[in-house]
Figure (cartoon, rainbow over the protein chains, first blue to last red):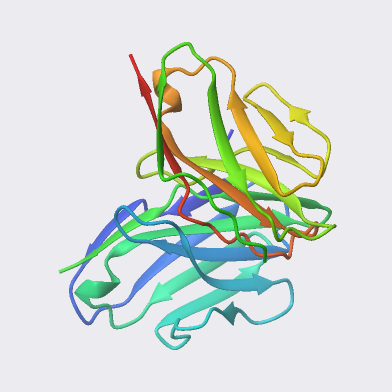
Length: 115
Length: 111
């Protein structure tokens, strides 16, 4: 069964509004969480990493004030796209790992369309 | 993180073995080789991983060369449902290490 639940699977929002994407670990306490973005026909691009008890570390070129990541608990991480613009339209995917197990578990992704 | 290089695309006949190569010549001694695949508009799915020994599970086999500079993922009897983008990733042993995705190989299984 699913280990990671990502919600919503699809969202359409207006330019200038904010959108929150949730990523939940269903079976374990996730010590590390990753957020990725994927444009059509491209690979996954890592946006940020958050480890238990610390703030998210953003990859170069990713605006931390625009993409707010909250590792709210060991089973929940949220990504908020603030003041969304059409160029933020993309497929966003979360990933979780747990201590002692290097395998990453991926959510099913969220298709964001900004109109 | 070590970089990986994979062919951009491959075709395979249904029922035949699909052999997907990956080069990772700068791999470090404690880094594992992971394989994931992504079916259109879904999150990546774990396939297999290994350090230096060959590995096999219900989905695939992983062959790692002795110098660990390259590996091959083998899908023994490819089906149409195996059509996907396959990613080879090299990363450290801890769960805190990043998964950096390369461009992957787009495998198309032909009927």
